[in-house]
Amino acid sequence: MYTQEITVEQGQLKGLAKDGYNFYGAIPYAKAPIGDLRYRRPQTAEKFTDTYLADNFPNKCPQNPQTGFFKKEFYEDSKYNVNDSEDCLYLNIWTPTKKAASPYPVAVYIHGGAFMGGYNSEVEFNGANFAKKGIVLVTINYRLGIFGFLAHPDLSAENKEHISGNYGIFDQIAALKWIKKNIAAFGGDANNITIFGQSAGAMSVQTLCSSPLTKNLFNAAIMESGAGYKKSLNYDLSLAQAEEIGKNLFKIFDIDNVVELRKIPTQTLLAKFNQYMGNLIKRNGGFLGLDLPMAPNIDGYLLPEGYDKTIENGHLHQIPYLLGSNSNDIGTSKDKEFGDLYEGARNLAEKENEITHNPVYLYYFKRQMPGDNAGAFHSAELWYVFGNLDHCWRPLTEADYRLSNDMMNNWINFFKTYKPLKDWRPYTEENKFIKQFDI
Image (cartoon, rainbow, N blue to C red):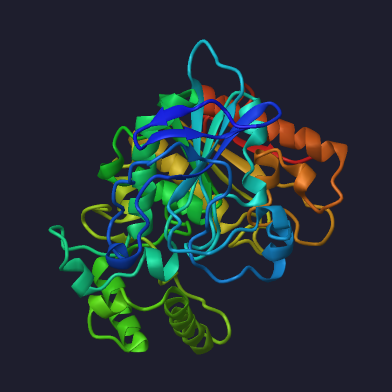
């Protein structure tokens, strides 16, 4: 059954009325970045010509098929499979069914995937349980890999800032601006927006919190397994370095200018980029062993300074933060009690406490997931945070459901009040508190 019509800046739309929540899917927040708009910043979405039926999941941005461990973990459910297309700048919204006396808090989730994969309708991100607990959840798509982060001097020459790359982050900003303008129509509070993400999503959140272009677009931030200070998945890729990568890619693409670049078919462009990545891996002994070639760059505009320098100069947005990692996360090993992402999150909390006294809440997820020996692996906590254990293939226990309920309630309280539940204190020099999650 469809919901009643609501009005957004493009016109009227309807979603689906579900059991205990409403779902609005595949809402365009920008024009399709195709044709001449490929490798340009996102443009304002076109007006609807009729009532828009927001009743399905959108395309995912072009990427390689998932394989191996994560395919089994998150990508086996056919109900959540979607097609690839460069026409992918859409968002999904889950809302409570009941109208409240005051607007509901808004949580905006940014998916991970090494800036080369992932999408906003993966099974583990289903927002029904958040909506049933009084949260408006938004999940967004953004351009990935060669489509989202390619820099080149010729692309930089096309705009007054003389920058290129970072299209995927500009997409995220465009989505946040759309949400800020329109979320009240869905019962959400435009003045209470928390952004959160995991892995490359956490890297994205830290990027957004480091940019002067996002002032007043959100009020708090959660970063899961990716962000930090001194040790994080983010790194300082300069615009000049990104442009050099782009020059090398032009040689592989066998093109001379951006006009030719915009004419290369989607799958051909992806295949040629895969060739470049394959050569990188081969040169590094079968493992990439270096920073991601398609990632945000320090362009002097979106990012005026490097990630650590932003923190050291007190330029990270002064908002409440919650961040942490998992006990078998990226950068962990048997000979280290804690991994790099744990240390990076702790370093960020300590630096923020030293410079700005801004509240930072830290967590450490330790649940050794049943079903194999992967433990508390990178992204394991997502099943628990979103409350979607029923979709997980693993032989979970009642203790897992209690843990999930605890994590959901802490995240939800943070969405509502910018603080988790009362037994979770901020990390300070006097009280170095880190919340541990385990059964």
